[in-house]
Length: 339
Ligand code: DAH
Image (cartoon, rainbow, N blue to C red; front, side):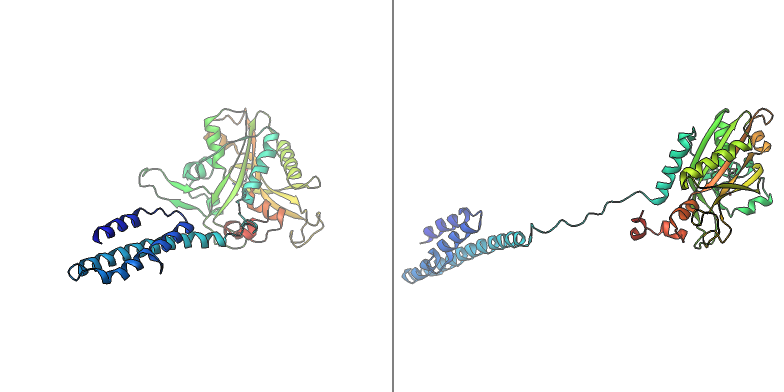
């Protein structure tokens, strides 16, 4: 009987089971009430007394082997069958949310498109900027009161100990970099991030975007500046948009202007958005100051130029009626998805 058991043991091991039907055959053959093992247990009483302990032991081992194989395979098949049952192929697919372009990126792309169509080239500058480009070369030396206009994040470099760094407070330093690297005529725009150490409120944020413009050539006039900005805002807000310039001050332009556009909510009649004035402020501009030309070795007798800076969050908020600048950067998809 022992040799018989060894054979059965082998048979159990090699019995091929690849699915539930074969598993059932396995059960019927070995473990069921009419199976081989039950019969062998019955036959145990016929085994001689001396042999009985060894045969009984072996028989129990074989039984365990068969049950073990059966249970583990059953578990395996049950798992896959139950998983199969829970897949309902008629269910609609789960919604897959894909990202979208941030509203400020959309504004940026739109602005770039409008300016490129009229011959402006896009340039770039670093966000971590040298104080020289951000202030000095823009006719704003240290202790100049105009530095107070912009709350600056100063950055201490451990590598370049003698250079002073800031997070650029405006995109105007790109003017300097462009004029140092290229000879006029120049016609560039430069959109990008700027940083100011301001208390965060519904209208101020420590980071925002500007688009800088610069045109340098012979005989560039204030008329050209007004023309190009009036053109841009008509394209951006609609043909009815009017532009006006009111005197202002920036160290790097002379004369300097504040750019206002007619309120497109009320058409200039006066409403809550424009605080009953009919006008909305969108940026600064002016004719490049001769001192700026001198700092980049351009002869102010030969060349003139205009420059402007437009606040991108500002014009976007106005276009879409967004009341709080912080919503741009809270990453709430319920807000961002609307645009
Ligand atoms: N850089 C100025 C600011 O951030 C805006 C500005 C004003 C840019 C006049 C200009 C300009 O290019 O000519 O407040």
